Length: 264
Image 1 (cartoon, helix red, strand yellow):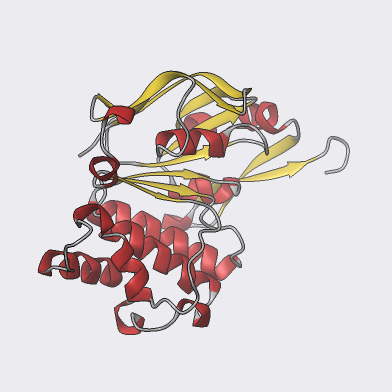
Image 2 (cartoon, rainbow, N blue to C red):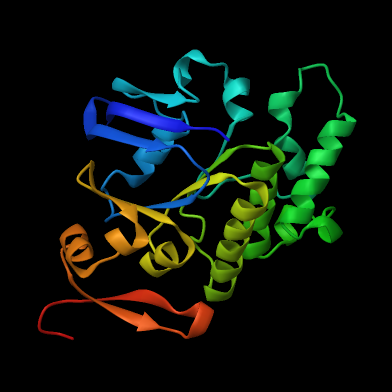
C-alpha cells in the first residue's frame, strides 16, 4: 500500500494561481472522484498529485517523501497517471502500448525480461485484452482504446492510479464498461484510484470518496453519503438539484437531477 499527500500547496500556470491552500491525503486503497465545475482546478490538482505540475508552494509527498526528491522511475513504480486524451501512434499494437508501462523498470540498454512479459500479460488479462493484444490502436473502438491505455497504466504495477476524465468521448455502454473495469481493478489489485469526473452519477456510483473542488479550493471531502447531497451540489455548481433514488436491489443508488430554478 502506498500513501499520497499534498500539503499547503499553491498551484499556478505562468504565474497565474489556479489553486491555493490545498491539503489532502490518501492513506488507504479506495476509489476517489474529484468533482467540480469547469475551471475549478480539478485537473490541475490531479496533475500536481501525478508530478506533472510542481507546486509553487507546499509539496506532494509519496510514502512520506517529497515527490520532487524522488527519481522519476521510483515515482512511476508507485504511481501511474493516465491523462485525458492520451495519444500514441496508430500502428502500435495493444501489447506494444502495454509494454510502455514497463519503462520505469528498464534501463536504456536492457531488453524486455520475463518479469516485464509477466506484468504485461497480467495487465492485458485484467483489462480483457489478451485475446486481441496484437491489434493496432487505430483499429480499436473508443472503449477498447481506453482499456488499452488502462492496460499500460496497470503494467506499471502501481499502488496508486490517477485518471483524468476517463469516460470522456465514450458512449453510455463504454462508460459503464470502463467504470466497472476501474472498480474491479481497484478490488483485485488493492490499489488507490483517484479520478477527475464530470459525470456526477458515475462518481457517486463507483467511488467510496468524493472531493468537491471550487475556485481552486476544497469545498467538501468525505464519503459519497456526506458529499453527494442537495446542499453541497447546489453550492458547488450554482444550480438547483434534486437527489433521487434510482434502480433496485444491489443496483440502487442516488442520482443527481440538475435544473434551473423555476424550470423543473
